[in-house]
Length: 96
Image (cartoon, rainbow, N blue to C red):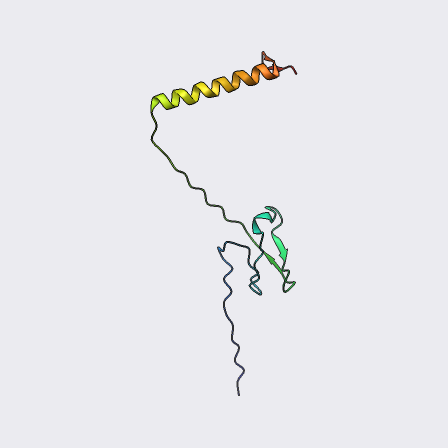
């Protein structure tokens, strides 16, 4: 008689939460885990495992007009002047 071992694969790669590769327990607040501490002790099975964070960046663009750009630039210049007046910036020195 031979021994049969049944194993199921735990989904732990590219998941939305950090998942223990030993028992499948998810770390509920994965986003709170450190960017620098890449070793975790599972709260369920107490085994150690490592993790890495994958970040995806995407961009959106939109059409604009020169009038809109000019309006934004004017607003930025106004905000800069208000900040200079608030902090009394003169010759790149700040006076409070």
